Length: 241
Image (cartoon, rainbow, N blue to C red; front, top):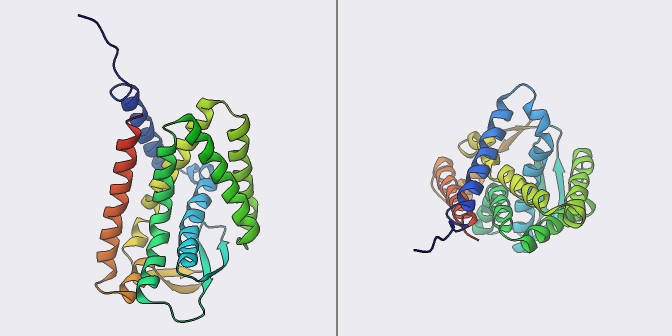
């Protein structure tokens, strides 16, 4: 009988899934440690950027003007978009949902991109260019100006000058950070809103409830299910090459 070594999907794939899960667990532990939040601060800002860009790009898709993106030092932020006429209820709900799904969608896409050398490099180039380009076009806050271009430059440097293993680890790490960002915002999904810069602000799920029907907690549960499905799909596909 001829011996055949284990395939990628059964051996290396499982090791990769273990690494991704481990990165997520370590990140969550760091968020609860005294200084872990400082270590992960740039990635918190990145998650906010994914969130607000989700709002902004969805607004553009519905014909609105994406006017500005603001990120505050505490990691909160907002995307201001303008419409020439009253947006439809579907548009309002979709734009609100896009921000909630944005970080996980981006994180899942990065994890999937790590499956091949070409996709890994392309993902870093695309992300780096998007971070720098969006800062020039839409970002209107000091925190965004300081953090986002720097992260974009690092992504581009890794894409063009980094070793393959470093590129892949970077893409996977960034993907994990996008996927687990929902952990830090879980309470936000199931709340009516809170305060931003001292002003009352409705949550995105409350905006969806006001635009459509059913209470905010229903939409929080539905979006949580969609997020879990995206992460499951990304991890399952990452198991294969």
